[in-house]
Length: 369
Image (cartoon, rainbow, N blue to C red):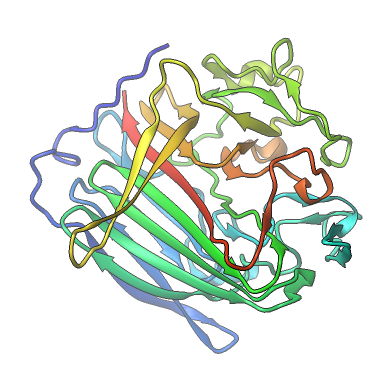
């Protein structure tokens, strides 16, 4: 099934628009006496993304369907109180996205103990992690894009992780209808790091669940897990399994074999004939090109009813595809390193050392068919 992105769609995303991308800010509440804000990024085509500096949380993402109707394709809280009372999707996850077995790892001969917040295991950075912290925030905009930059300083041994870590997340909504997320981090002591965003996408505007969505994942292999979702250490082919999503597949078609849906780590690979996406980052003041990253196509999600299409590109070696358990409320594409990599030296390394800079780029590109 071939999808064609119609990026110039009626008046909502007219390519001739001269409206400059914008960022607006509103007070949203306080956490530990720190102000929390809601940031609204809008590009020249009317696409809108909303984030808060509490947890770096992705609150909403308004895109048009094939009839030009704008709805949010991200599940998020309607109010600050709702977000503050309950764990919500869309958080920035760190220091380590996904699971670490037995809540322990050894680095340079030293064993570190983390919070066992997923049975006997550790998940998503701990009790609070990065997702329940207030981040510093600045904004910028130019003729190409609207940008929100979030910064968090994690202390040495916070949640059990070594090293004073500075993390910067640049969130850029550009006029190509791409939401670019660039993560960078530095440390003063060797540590492990695996950052992602835990957004739940629902291309119906949450009017229905995602079982009728179609998905394609560019991965020949995955990491098998035990009953606690801990990798066995193997890297196995998807061929001949319900996890073979290399061709367009309706999610509901696999639920006889996977009644609880998907919660799997797929190993992203370059696919012949499928081009990479160049993610370009500019200085908003001078307009100078700062960095270009070649991001691989990782996954696509399509809703036949609305015509909305979401493409995920990343520099990371894997994505976790998760369909929200038996609720099927949304679909997550968490760009990441493999779960439990600190305890599996055969996996791509997640070690960050002083003098190095961690960099990760993920792009969510929207369109309609």
